[in-house]
Length: 186
Image (cartoon, rainbow, N blue to C red; front, side, top):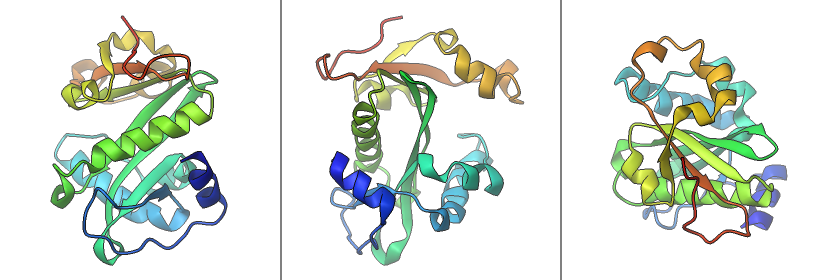
């Protein structure tokens, strides 16, 4: 997986049309992907399920994203790896198009991100989510949000929703020395 991701970072391949989300290629985003990533994320944000992202925010952070495209090249999913310290990163901006829900694409996006984080030598991944059960099935455990002061300082302190945030913190240890199911205990 690492070799494929590194190769795609330097020279993204066109995404073939594939019907099954189980076989959709997941690749590193390029700047041209970000308008559709914004459309997908902001669609969920309008429903109160994610925080909105401006085109400027997305364009500055395109290197953090992985994307999956389906039939006709339509964006079906995205996820971002946001690094806070040499050992800590966030699973961020996970979004799957409604027509691809329930087909395992979200799981595949996060698993691919976990592989990338592991290859970078990161020790812990966390996410703030409204769907903690999804992350639990991937080996994450519910933890206190206060375990991530870097996230709070960078994003939560200035968020309009900080006083009534519904997001739940989940985390997972990912370094190679641990068994696949091990996680942060908080």
